[in-house]
Amino acid sequence: MIALGYITAALTLVLILITAIYATANWRTVRLMEADLRFRTQPIPTAQLEVAVTQPSQRLLFFLSVWTSSAPLRIEMVHVHMRFEKGVSLSTLFPSLRGKYLAVGEMTTAQDTFDPTQGAFVDSHVILTYQDLAGLFRYQSTFMLDGRVTTTAYPMNTAPIFRGLWTKIEAAYRAVAKLGDV
Image 1 (cartoon, rainbow, N blue to C red):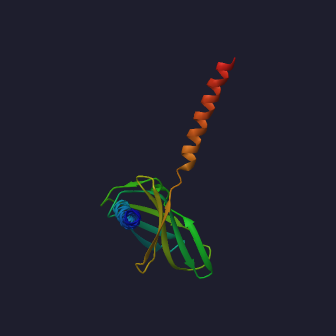
Image 2: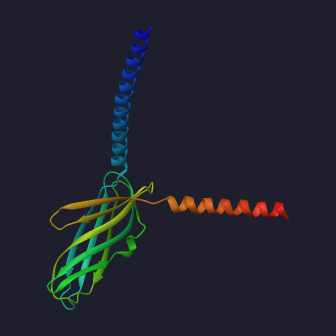
Image 3: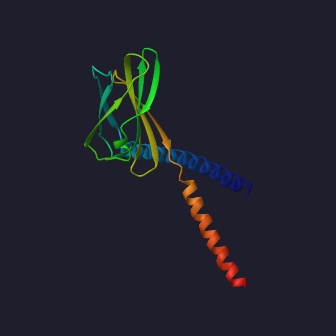
């Protein structure tokens, strides 16, 4: 009888070990699938900035082309970081692109001007802030003149929306409860 108890305990431990291995493998598989889905829905934009200097006024003329290749996106903001002989300037340009929806393969162009006050123009790079259409992530990509691109993803915070909805439901419930007390 005692031997049967030891065998049952040993088989239980083996079953627990196999379950732990299976759960770990399943967790890794789910993480891979989630990463693959996120990669497929992440917009990968390309931005090209051309700069021209007008001769009489030394005003900078910017021409920006933006397109996406993997998933649609919504542009939130475009910054142009400019370096001059006497300093640096970060300017929000291209207001016409704010809120613009770009489908896969679609290209949009915009033009804007800037009056420099810090000497001669040296170089610039574009900082594009955009989000995926699901509203899950906000991305910020920096496009350098030499072709380098860095992208950072930030999860969108949807908690205040649901907290606000729950607060409205509670307020409505309290109002109905007060009517019942009268």
